Length: 361
Image (cartoon, rainbow, N blue to C red; front, side, top):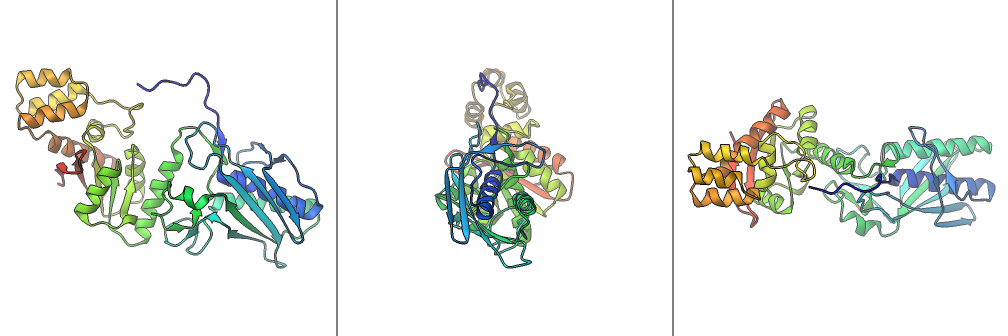
């Protein structure tokens, strides 16, 4: 069982909040000649965080400010990244224009909340930045027509650790965040990436997507069905996040692929497969092997087993198709959650990448 933290987990700030604060500081300096440091912004839900500036520069016609992202206690790959906003005056009547600097990606596939060719700055951060530009423009009797160029130090390398390459976002990170706040271990960013992956697959015209619990199962399902990368969804432990979104936004076909232990939990009705939030029920596994004709000794060994894979090996030695039964029951859980017309099949993947169980209806 996962150990509970000995103190409340500390919240952090999204890339969108950091970019907004940097843009506010830069535009303020461009109009007044002085940087606010620290700079305060108001988030969509009313919070007013203050951000210290890591860099600042005022030159002829533009100003730059940078902020180090603090993700709190969340295991975010962008924690510690330096997010910079360069603000320069734009053409009259142009409003706020956004550009991608080094380390910020550009959208190349449809299905994202931003158009193809646009910098990967999501709608909520754009709205926050437009709001602060409008506030400062009103305070200084300025028109508020500006060009904001966002950049992230080392963002292109960091993006390789995210879903961005698969989502068709090239050249760097996305500037994200709806509330401006990172909730530790909320896993909202991962689930958001699953949703975005489904949207991109649909917009690309794919009628078959695959959600996998890990890299080994993803490689197996890709080889088995010859699926292109944009049709592959890194589901991880979030079966519920995948299935519930597909229930609202159906596609014709879904494959779920994963290891025996993870899919056993799905077969037992769990939609969150993380070890801290769901456990394998060995009494239920014992009932499964009993239904397959196991001996009394094997049923007893199953109840007393330490791991699901131990039970799998015992069943294999006894010639019992336990992985197929787990696949069938996992498929039943998935279909009940989908509650729609999406066809679903399940593949159980061994640690060496082989397919050891399947259910396709």
